[in-house]
Length: 142
Image (cartoon, rainbow, N blue to C red; front, side, top):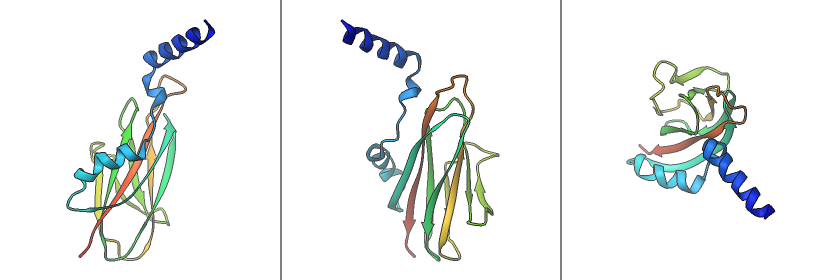
């Protein structure tokens, strides 16, 4: 009987707040982006779960004179997620502040270095609201 009550309570919680169970499933994300990135080649993916109203930074290493395209993925949030791509010195190379629908950035770095992708999520009425953010790195040789 206790198991039934616990299961019903969990189901009721999920029905009321399905976003609470948002996860970043790398295998699913990779499958989703393999077609989208063509003619670029898949280099890697980095993802994580983040609470609404918070920021997180994901680091990507890039090599000079290689053509790259970063794809930005987010799900489970009540509004648009802000994205910034910065150098190590926090010089902003890209932002979707003026157009939140921008979900990719193509570039050729002048030197080998680490870039930082900062995601800032919108606030939510629910304290425990969270979702997934991810960066898909793809490249295309010259």
